[in-house]
Image 1 (cartoon, rainbow, N blue to C red):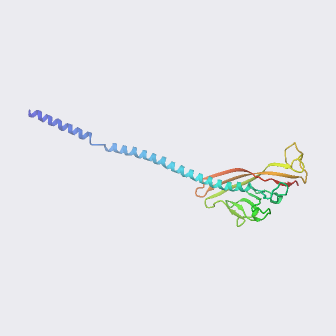
Image 2 (image 1 turned 180 degrees about the vertical axis):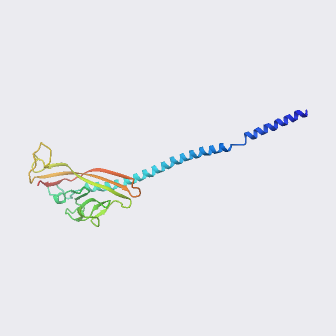
Length: 246
């Protein structure tokens, strides 16, 4: 009887020891392996998050630069489109804002000058002379009677923010969109025309020309010069220009 009770007691102690062995937790090696796996997962998550943040920051910078260039382009397009505007236009009188002296002109590819009746007085004055030019990495607008040879100062005023971006390129190209010989419709108006259906113009022929100005603009952010962008747009000038064939 006593022997049986001792055996039961020993069996109970053995089971208790097994339970302690089962419930004692992870070993040191198991803990190190678990920590290593956790660190690898966290590193992967952080890498993905960091890449996403950088991509978002770059995208925001690109959008910012594009918006800056778009505003500048819109300003130039709206103003150039008005070249030759005359408040007293009647289709018969000579337009002083579309004369040879005030014709749309491009110099060195990066400077455009023209005139229109800004104040509505039907007379050409300093305020009616308009234009755009690349000056010291900034798009500048023509003031008073500035010409393309003038640099900055009170004659060319920057309209792009020099603290934010550098304008790396600005170019204009003047294209003849349409041309009519008013003296004789049977003659052409362009000496270099390839139109074989009309004869060449004669010296003294009055011609009427409609222009298109192709604009190209490029820039980069000052805070991150790897962020670059460019825009191109064609502007149809609403007013026609009369000339005399030389």
